Each structure stands twice: as C-alpha cells, then as structure tokens.
Image (cartoon, rainbow, N blue to C red; front, side):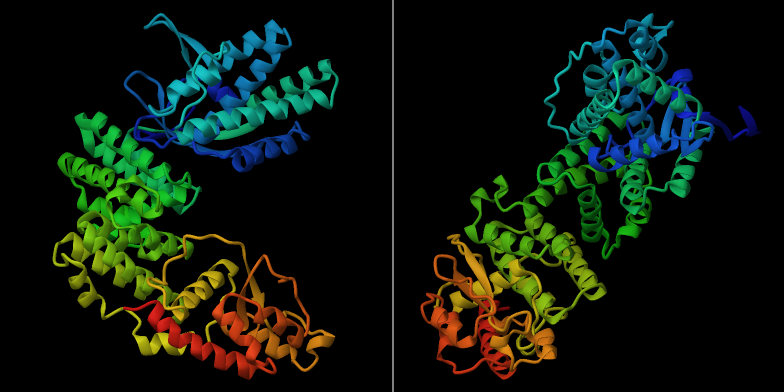
Length: 561
C-alpha cells in the first residue's frame, strides 16, 4: 500500500485478489445491486473475455472507494456492483467445478474468494457482505454451495442478483459446450487467474465517510441517474444517526412502492424530482441533491424527509397505475384520466398529479385529473415543452403543498397563466402532425366520440376492438397517386386530417390504392369521421386542410378547460 496522506491511501490490485485478501461490506446507506444481466453483466464478461486474449496485458476496471469500519473491514462507498458481480461469477465457477466433482478447485475457490474464518466470532463468514435488502439472498442463494435459501424473492435487486448468476452459469456452460471438459477447466482457471492478477482496480481507502462521499460524488462515472439517488440516500442515512434503522425501513418501503409499478431506476429519480418540486418549488434532476442538502440539516429533518418520501411514494405509484387500489373509492374518471396521461408519457405533469392525489379529496381529484388530461393534450398539440411546463406545474404543486390551493376551482384559477386557451389550441390543432400511431388513434377516437355526441370523449373507450390507422394519402407516390407531389406527401402524410380509423373486420388493407377505391371502404365504415370522407370527389392537401379545421372545432369540445 502506498501512503499518500492521513486522509487517503490507495493500491493497484487485481479485483479478485482484493476479494481474496480483504473483507468488504456494503453499508446500509448504499444502494442495492442494480446491474442488468443482458447489459452490464454481459458487457463485464465480454470485456474480460476480450482482454484475456492478451494475458500479458492488464485490464483496468476503474476505481473502488472504501472506508475502514471499526471492525477493520472495508465499507464500500463506490464499486459494489463490480465487486458483487465478480463474486457472483466466482461463485458460479465454484458451482460448476462442484457439479463436475472437482473437489480441489471447488474448495479452493470457496475458501479463497467467497468465505473466510472469523476468529472473533469463530464462524465461517462471507468475504463480501451486501446491504440489508440483498445480503440474505446473496449469502444463501449465491454464496452457499448448498443453495439453501429461497430464490423466489420479490425484491428487484434480489431478482437481478439471481439473473446475473443464471447468465453467468449459462456463460460457463457455453464454455464447456465449446471445449472438452479438461480444456473448460483450464479456461475457467485462466479466468480466475486473470481476475486476480490482471483485471486491475485502484482501491482508494478514505479515512472517513465524509471523504469517501466526496470522492464518490466527484469520481462516480455512472451518470446522473445513479449518483443523485445514491447521494440522497447517503445524505439522509448519514444524518439519521442512531435512527438509522428507522431511516432504512422508510427508504426500503419507498422503494417497494415504486417497484410495485416499475423496476426502472430512472423512475426513482423522477419521483425525487416530483417530491422536491412539490415541497420546494421547481426542481430539475441535477438540482435534487442540493435541494435535499439545503432542507435536511439534522437527524429530525432527515427522518421527516424520509417519512414524507415514504408517504408520497404510495401516491406516486398510484398515479402511474390506473388499477392501483387507491382508486377503488374514487370516481372511475380518475382511472381513465391516468390511462390517457400515461399514454402520452407526460412526466412533466407528475409533480402536479402527485400533489393533487395526495392533498385533494376524492371529488376534487376526479375533477382536477380531467382538467389535466385536457392540459396535457393542449400542450402536446401546441408543442410547449421544457421550462414553461416544468416551472408552471411545479408552482401549482408547491401551492397545493402549502395549502394556498385547496380545491379544483382554486387550481383552475391559478392555472390560467400557463394553460393553452381555446383560440391557441384550435389554431395549433388545424395543422397538427402526429407521428405516433398510438397517439393518433387516441386523438381520432376521442374526436369520433365528440362527433357522436357521447359524454367524456377525452377518455379512452372501454371497448377494445382492433382498429387500424389509415393514412388516406399514402406514404409514397404510386401510379394511383401520380397527381400528388413528394413535398406534399412529406408535409401532409402525418397530418391528423390525413388519417382515418378503420375497423379491422373490414377490408382495410387498401394501402396505396386510388382514392376512388378507398372511398368505397370508407363509405362502409361505422366511424362518422371516416364515412364522411366518402362524400368527396378527390383527395389533396386542400381537402386535408379543410378536414383538419373541422377536427379542430371538435377538439376544443373534446378537451375542454
């Protein structure tokens, strides 16, 4: 080990040798295992496989930051994914040797890399201990040669550990399949030797947690998505002090709520942004940590923040899932509103949706969510994105949190500064282009319901027939459409006025057929807006413009303020 100063030491070492020589612990304030088998794990093995073809050259796996605990173990501040994945791979190789009856190799891997004898406790203990959410699964299902643990865990991180192991097991079996048994044994031992001697890491040993977190924040190369979530967790757990167990339970409950609807790590970041926007005003993703730091200065504030996060997470899961049990006692309009908003993947509106869901009563929530559907459609059609939306929604959400907005009527009044009025919406709708088929079908179905005089046309209908989206003017010039110019096709083909709905039970495969032939199909359509097209003699850009202007008049009624 090279001594640098009293606060920081480092050594260059093979990753498997580090596992062999030391004991590592993932502290409770660190995140769970998160590598995906088909991406990070696959890349990890591929990179080592490529590097091992030049066994004389080293391969650098990056920096791992640790602190030294009171018991003398290394506590990982950054790098657990690489250490855990390496250990899982060594366990998979151990299991392969055991299955082949090779006791010497099996025992050597187990005692060198997976377990060690602790003289204090007089017990055999793992060389790597993961955090509280993962360790039991990791120890009993992966590290134990007897595989005595339950492998049906519902925790996302546990599943990822199991998937990583299964991927590696299959990888090892492919080595055996492509080589004779003795050659496979030699290849796997070469892998272990390479991981020990040539797959290098820089092990940075910080004197204390503060130095480690500083290094983690400045050196972390996994990007905004990971670092922000981890740093928030680190901050709150550090401040929790002797209430760490309570903090840990609150964080785990929050994660469980979010994972009940999605296992996407990006959603945790989106959730934190929404909560910060509600509590503190407009917050971008890169500002999340600074917001948390400014507003949690001691143990009490950290626990309060974690309590709020845990409470908000349940409602956040609900606004992502129209079938969530929370909505059982609400008007069915709430579920239909969520269904439409989720169709548009309108993440910018989530702080406001979350505030409404948390603080409004059932009646006001239903009314407000219907408004949010209209707002979302109007913003999409007009093409307003970015700062205006983020800041506007955040301000409304913050005012609900501060209780200056208490009802749907208050919300309507305060929203007038940001919403798109009827005149703006109608003008934009007259030339709207929609490139996503799913969204185009929704727009056309909603307009159809308005044309029929049906109630609540802005909601997706309960019936689910197979409906084809027909482009009247085709996507390319053909003999049947020789009168159309290519520039007209480029400009008008995806205009809503050039689209129609056709039920799948009719002859809707009409592609590039002439307009005269298409008209016969349109005439038999049960959709009013499609049937009306058959009254026209020709189809060109002028007809598209006129049809879409009529659609714009319907749109104002379909998505009212």
